[in-house]
Every structure is written in structure tokens, then in C-alpha cells.
Image 1 (cartoon, helix red, strand yellow):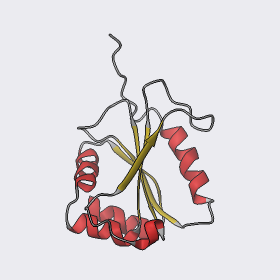
Image 2 (cartoon, rainbow, N blue to C red; image 1 turned 90 degrees about the vertical axis):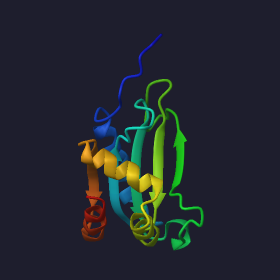
Image 3 (tube, rainbow, N blue to C red; image 1 turned 90 degrees about the horizontal axis):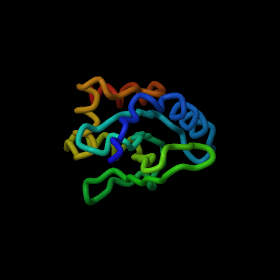
Image 4 (spheres, rainbow, N blue to C red; image 1 turned 120 degrees about the vertical axis):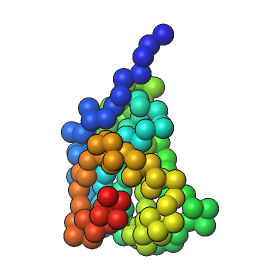
Length: 135
């Protein structure tokens, strides 16, 4: 049986390139991007949180969940078989709300941060303030 290799921090370079591409998009202003490894999730998956102006219409999810989706290898972001890139997206209003109410995704991010398993890839002034809420 093959052993799954942890993806954090091995994919930091690729994550930086991806975040750089997202910063150049015209449909939203990126405030914060964090590459992290939640301890209770698959170690073979790559987790990236992005907080973007206007994401989701600046609405707070009524089910207390940050939007998350995943996909496998692509030409622009190749990953090993069985590995997924898990994107967790939010807007500043929702992220503040999630932090105040300690949503599951926030707990995972805090735990990863406390374990030294979280790297801020990008943060503008607003993103730095958001990150202090986690730390």
C-alpha cells in the first residue's frame, strides 16, 4: 500500500504562482491568501484560503461554512495522483463573521497556524488585519 506524502510545505512555489495569478484578476480584490495544512484533513491535499472583495456577493453563508471546492491536477497546477487542491474562499465580511463565531474552517486554520503549518502567501493591509484575527 502506498503511503500518502504530506503536501505542506512542498507546494509553496506553485501556490505562490497561483495566488499571483489570482491577484491579477479583475473581478475581485484579493486581501489574504494562506497556504495551510489542517491537521484533521488529508495530508495529500493542498489547502489554500483566499479572502476576496465581493466574493459570493459579500454575503455571509447562513449554514456557517466557508465556500470550499477541490480539483485534481491541471496543466497550470500539476499535482500527484490522488491529490486535490482545496480552495476555501470568503469575503471580508463573511470572514470576520466566521472568526467571531469560530466556524469549523477558522478552527482548522487556527490549529494549522499554531502548529506552524500555515504560510501567508499574500496579505495587503486589510489582509494583515484579517490574519491577526486568526493568530
